[in-house]
View (tube, rainbow, N blue to C red):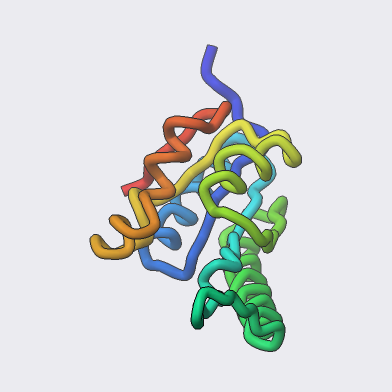
Length: 148
């Protein structure tokens, strides 16, 4: 019997690679008559500025980023609905992209498949941040599809 997916997660980060993964996720969701969750994870560490060992987070910058991400996700949602995938939700979470994508979000939303690109980061960022995709494929309890 063929695997049936009911809750598909596609994490997006604004990259072309992530949006290509979204295209794949839309097709899988349509074939399975599944719910599609589009997620962006905002890592607060990116807002930290270290000066003499002190870390400061600027609330205005965080709020503006959150608003920008929400607007981006709403645009993606409209595009998905135009493509005849009506059962779609968008989500913004704060935290570590690795653990939110691999564990926290799937546990909260009963995700049975994650569709993501090979990586949304350039080679330098990959070394510094660590490949989120690699972590997700190792740790996630559900199926993970790498869309190329």
